[in-house]
Image (cartoon, rainbow, N blue to C red; front, side):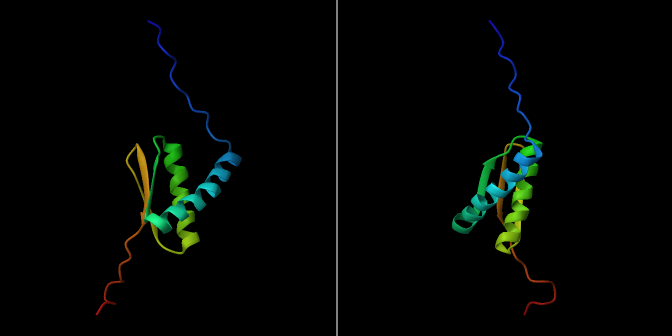
Length: 90
């Protein structure tokens, strides 16, 4: 039996990385606006980093706090719970 070679990903060039961040930002922003969250497979540190940057950009675009959670398989981007500053309630 022949063993298949391991799958190796080619890293994105800096230009491809910048384009991916810009293009994913509009997709994620649209999903957050309609569904309240966005989940995507992100099983490498590079993909997690990319989508964390996307989350920051989306927060700036929508002018709302956005958080991302990664577990090594997926990353979830959602709106942060807004809480009032201590001492300013009631």
